[in-house]
Image 1: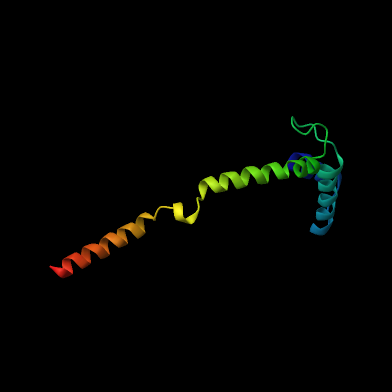
Image 2: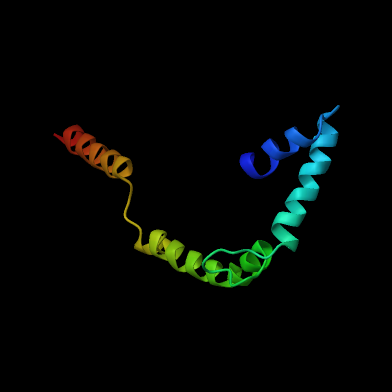
Length: 99
């Protein structure tokens, strides 16, 4: 974005306000993401926005599979180490109190 928008824009125009710069940036972003075909390896001539929208279902599927692997159901989770230490400590205190 620095090379493709800002450096070019600042050579062409002197901006009086941030709002003027933002308006030009918004136009450039719209053209960059929604109008111009992308030449990337997996875009096949589509716009970046269309490539993103086409890949969204696949990304959601992969994300849900990886989240399920990272966060197993509650009954499968092991207790955190701190909770285990607290249980052991309470057990030790109760044994010591009885003796």
